Length: 125
Image (cartoon, rainbow, N blue to C red):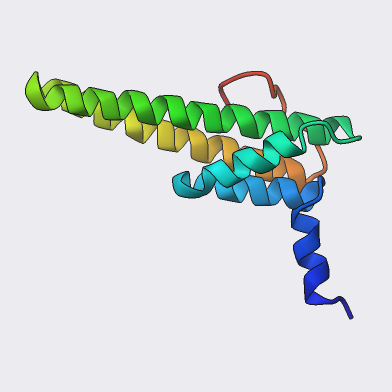
């Protein structure tokens, strides 16, 4: 029988369990800094496909931060300028959430299959 502490220790070592945890953390915008911390901490594991996943997680979080900041900026500026700018900011936030979700789900599926992300240096899915 496996001890409960053994499963928790797998989250703080580079590997498939940690990668899946990072993808799940990145899907929630509030816990994405924890995923970024893990992805930066374990950026140089032995296996090349793990390295590709950590790079993919970091670019996903970068997209999340850039898209969220741009969308919020458009909403704030639109409060004094135009309603159309507010709607554009909401659209940017929505598209950022969709892209983040798609990238995380794609990465999770590829992790479960033991494969690296298709084009991990791209900012698209």
